[in-house]
Image (cartoon, rainbow, N blue to C red; front, top):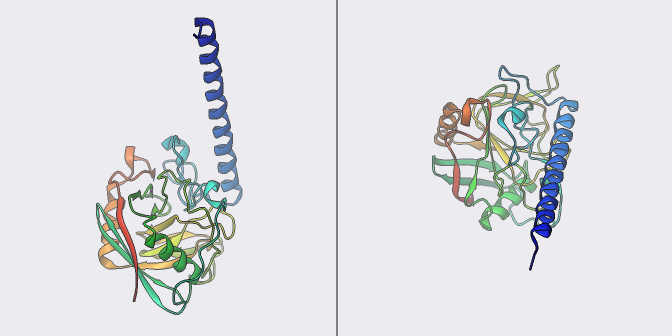
Length: 262
């Protein structure tokens, strides 16, 4: 039988361990924020900045913390490869269509395998497995850049498929301007990454209004008009709490994702 003294010591030890975990998580977040700023990916906005494509919105992040960075990348957790990239199983010269059945409406986009064969192959592999089914589009940015980020099985910006895929098609949007950025046009679908080359996993972002970003994010899809209207409506509804970056106020859950040829 555990004495009251032993119980108090156990509770104190558990409290200390929780504090240590929180401190370690805070250190990791600070390190990620500093890395983003050093990489020049921060986009300053009136609300203090937005944190989308450079660092994922991890569970427990406050909206104030999240609004101090900007760019579409998940946290480094997604870049840790534990399984191999799927073998090529598509027509590398073909055209494919990804359909997302969401609770806000259908979002579909075409993918050109000739330009982004490994990205398309990965998305078909994951969709065929039901990987995206039931996932949330966890992050919306409404200032500086205009994107909705999806594809995280954890729903907090840290999830991925357990493998990474290489960057592709990075020159497709033209030569960067003097600020090192190119325009990702409205309707573009591109890969999120950790800010490091060849670190894409399953997270991707939907551009609902022209956005300027470094040419570091694989553009691999084009949203159809009906789907773009759905994403624009989510963007117009804003972010939870009125911030410029964070969970969308109009929550988006992918009920079913499918990739078909043609």
